[in-house]
Image (cartoon, rainbow, N blue to C red; front, side, top):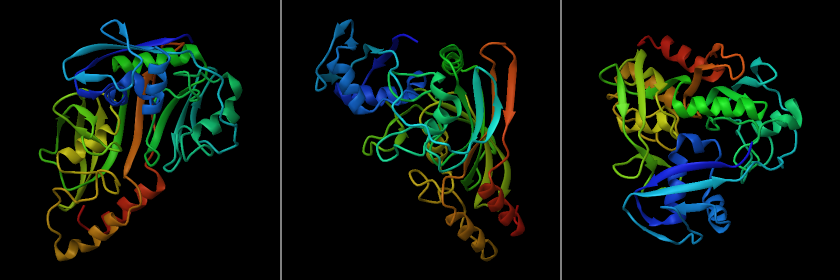
Length: 333
């Protein structure tokens, strides 16, 4: 795979490196490449970023907030640096081009500061060897898209550059379909619908994303309540029409129904009604859940070589299934 070019429109005022890093974090085609601000600064230093056709190397270049065309050249991948580690993988499907895995909660997808070992990439290197596709000129072999560390469920992994390019194109044109199950605080009203809201970097916390009025990327989530637990919580099925960072977590929190257990967006109960005496146990069960209750349960796409439509489903992981079982025993489902 050779160099790739990412085209963006930058519309926010501020330092170029910060605005560009935020824009790349919201761009569906760029998300899997994992552009940190340090990575953006390196690309600028190497003369790989252009604004309106002019190469800009100064990370501190000031943008005035007017729409400006930005081109980012991403160098071809280099040899992967992470070490292979034998880590058990739940493989749902595998052939010479790709894998579909059921990622457990707690597994980091690719190495980064604080998580250089024990990641999915380390496991893939051991399972597939050096033939894995590289992307973005950095060590993320085979990774076409990502799931957050504490989100469980289905992921597609490319085993060669051909498959990677074909699968990435399906993410970019939104022909690939993903469906998630989320346990959220409260019961959305109406019980089915869509949530629209451009997503960008949170204006006050770089660790978070948010629905923003300016500078974000369009995002659309379809949702439907499949089960309610009194007025306090509900199991919601979410289908992504776009693939922004933290999209479901941000959108559900934005409408007042944050994902249960979400450390970034779900610290408050949102629009869940006041607990009745017979519901206090539910509050305790939900509050004790130790991760965001979010699972990528289904994925549908076209096989990169055979062009056959593939559809995979993964049952809820044990912790979410056990929580739902306990909630149902409370008799308010």
